[in-house]
Every structure is written in C-alpha cells, then in structure tokens.
Amino acid sequence: MKKILINSAILLTGLTSINAQAVDQGIESCIAAVEKQKVGNIVTLEKLNVGGKPVYEIEVKDANNFEWEYMCDANTGKIIETESEVSSVNSLAFKSKMKVTEDDAARTALKKFPGIIKEVEYEIEENGDASYEFDIVNSKGVETKVEVDAATGKIIEVSIEEWEIGIENDERR
Image 1 (cartoon, one colour):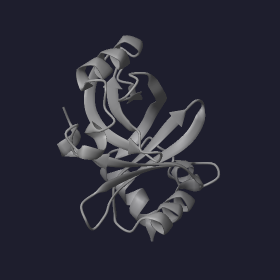
Image 2 (cartoon, one colour):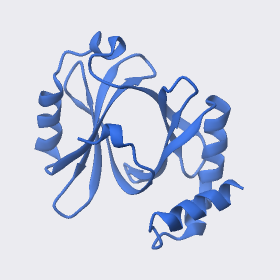
Image 3 (cartoon, one colour):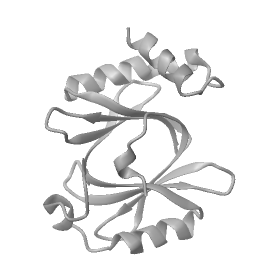
Image 4 (spheres, helix red, strand yellow):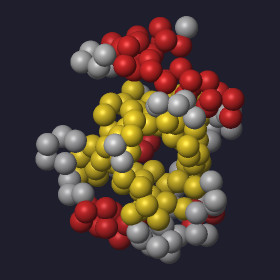
C-alpha cells in the first residue's frame, strides 16, 4: 500500500523524471523504521545527498501537532538522526540554547552557500542542542540544506536535496 501511495504522490507532484523503482529502494524500510519510533502523519519526504550518501528525510506530525524529523540511510533503511522541530526561536527549548541570532546564522550559511533562503526550521537535536536549518536555492536551482548550530554559529550539516514530496507552508520565508 505504501508503495502505491509513494508512487502516486510522485506522479501527482510532477516528479515524473524520477525512476519509481529507484525511489522504492530503502524507502519502505525507512518509513517502517520511522513508524516504529513515532505515530503520526508524514508531512514531507525528501531524498537528500549527504556527503555522497543517499538519505531520506521524513518529517512526521504527531497527535500533539509536534513535528519530528528523521534522517534515514536510503541503503540500509536505518534511522541515523532524529530531531524535533519547534515553531520559533522563542520556544523555551530553542531559546535556552540559542546564542546566535537567526540573521547571523543565515549570513554564515549564505556566505558558504550563496542563494536565496526558501525555508527555515528551528530544530532540537537528539542531545538537546538547538540548530537552524536553512533551505537555500542557488542560481542554478539547486537546493542545499544548511544546518547551523544555534549556540556556536558553526555549520554542522550540509545536504543537497534531490527531490521533495509535500510542502510545509508555515516554514516558508
């Protein structure tokens, strides 16, 4: 059933250039792994390139309307990172760790990866640290996700988006 839903979502979103069989490799395992960790609805599904490795980023909204982000190795189907999202920098969990403003973090990300910030998320890492995640689109249309530590201002993770299904309007800039 999930395979049908994923393939249908791909066709509905116009991602017809993606080979549906390639999408299936690992995605069912990743969805199953996420479902074991969190009950909720998948909001977005993205295929990323993280340091040359294929990764699925699956965002889930739970019954309490909290969002969770799972990074799953596309080859093994294993979850490699879990983060929770908060709605703003004013969230207590975020603000208590934040030492770098969003503007300063954005400047750091844009200096290394020039373009236009299309989306920003405020994330709480598994260890409790806060980070900004900027989706930056360059002049060639390539989207790069740049995660900046909210305490140190250093870039801690970079990935290139290959495709995305779903849109979170509340996170658009």
